[in-house]
Length: 187
Image (cartoon, rainbow, N blue to C red; front, side):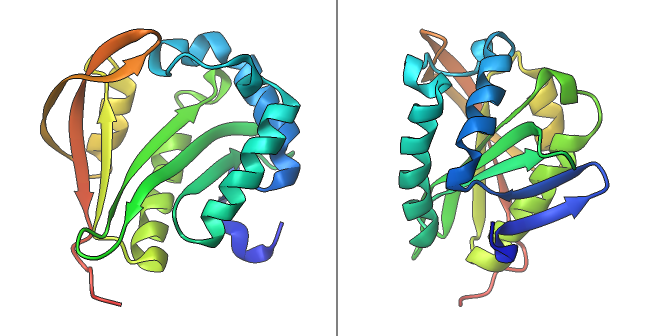
């Protein structure tokens, strides 16, 4: 890992860009949290849960990192154990200067404020380092934890999208939210 891949560090976690050598820890994370994340995730192919699947995926993700087209971040503890993920996708510059964010947190890391702190740092990084004006997030209305995290960070509700994403094999309504960079300046 290059030092500039570290986005944020606290006593109980490190937030950094995923690297090719993370394939094992990421596949282990998703295997261990498969049932926990199932109600909030799309149906996954088996390769998503394998070392080889993540080796392939990380090659593509690192190319996207290089071109500022997407960013896949891991949240790890001091021992390198995965606690969660934060991903920024659909990055668009002029005139939109926006992206979507998605995230997941291990069952074992719930209730400690890790996602709130990591997502806050990640959004600040996207605003300061990548020049974005708007970050959009969507959540299933029954996902109270996600709603609370986004609200605590200042994401504002913008509406309800009916049958927005195919999650766990069912079209699910989503609450649409966004966070605006009030200090945005053209780069």
